[in-house]
Length: 178
Image (cartoon, rainbow, N blue to C red):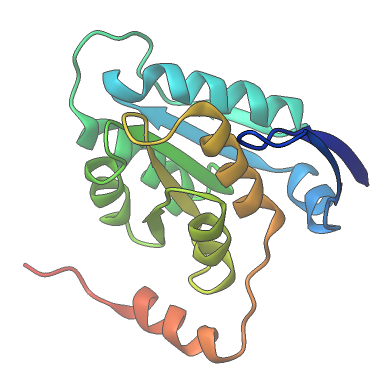
């Protein structure tokens, strides 16, 4: 699929860019359920991401929060992590103020490989090198357009395997510290 978009440059004339969406785009959309969750700081961005995912044809499992009333991010990070780790969702997106705390919570769940991402590159690498099945965003650190570009980059990427396979297996074999 080709997309043509107009980009703005600081002080320069706008230019048109042809972007070709990878074939993986169709693969991730088909029969995919993505759990989304946030604390109060990430509430608005979570809703923006959820709507964007629905626009891609993804089934969205919204695990809350449902308002900007103050709540604790570990509860929602765990909820997204459990949905993915226990198989209720294929992937997950969690949002808090920084993307860090909610990521720590999600990553405690067995079977989850969560990473905080800040842009398209970190999101793409989270999938290609670490096979991240949950990404976390900081609503106070990234704007909507950057967040959506990161989500798309993550969904459009595929795990590269190869030398990364053994590393991901090591991550999966780590036992919780008691």
